[in-house]
Image (cartoon, rainbow over all chains, first blue to last red; front, side, top):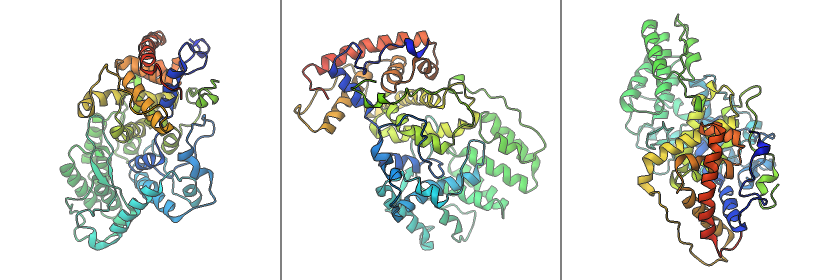
Length: 283
Length: 190
């Protein structure tokens, strides 16, 4: 049935209902999240620099959300800090850790940063505090400070929300006495960030950190990412049979994994045939 | 366009199936997160949980974007994920915050309160009304009446034939409109 055959919506003036009912429905349509909420959400997702909205899409009533983007003449440092904290930190790590087909993160340029001011000053402030905390090497092994920004980790369906610190690029540069040590306060994201950072120079440490990840976060939301790092580390260590077995196991558990191509590109000597049972209801 | 609905001044939000490259995850977030959030709220996600559940939706989007095959529009695909994640959420979380109820909330406060408060009150009324619907009717009602997807896209998002979607819509409308009429009798039009 074509759209032209559709009945008028209740909210339309031509529908057979009352203005009071329409008023309630209109209120429902106005229930969009505010900029603070979206900034917090953005900080919890593996996002790179945020682009402006697609102009082809209908423009929603988002004055509070997009007003900063529409006025690029002011670029306070606090907004840049928020972007770095919200998008670039997570986005750059994910870009490196998971350059799967789904991920299209790019290095942030000043222009893209300037165009991606979805962050709210409040979020910027708290994230800036958290980043400042981590820049102090004395605080690295210490329990998280009260002022540290805490956000929920990515969720799998059915899991409960867990609080983790937002990752910071500065953390990986901090010296550590034992590269494979895991402190109780270390978050899942940070642990895997360290593993990813170690991959190039010290794959054994990277592998050890993925073991630590599995032990520390047995139901972690980043299990696939951890396995990807482990497989890559095993390849680097020349342990291809193990790498192949783990890659096959990963794809067996997650047939629709976005990392299939990445795994296949590791030169494991076999092709992981896709047998995607993805529900047709969700593609 | 409806003079009563500023959002309807825009083109229909149902978009054609994919043509060309799939947008980046960042682009999808910017373009669709506010609407996904709103849809989740109307689909029964508690305000305190909206951020968590919306994150869940976009993590699924992130993981599955590479396998998106363009059988529907991206928008419809995301709404479909919202419908299923919200359904899962209600199964596991309604006990924490609220229980579905046939009772509509009492209106509180004078009719001349601030517009924002009235909006909040109206949304609470709408949510309570929509909550009385079963999952199937609720999804169709929210996507068609509030998110303004074309019915063909609604059917794809909820995974049913178009005629079934229409049947659910009419049943949902009957219930929601009657309840809203009763609840808003004497109410100021906003």
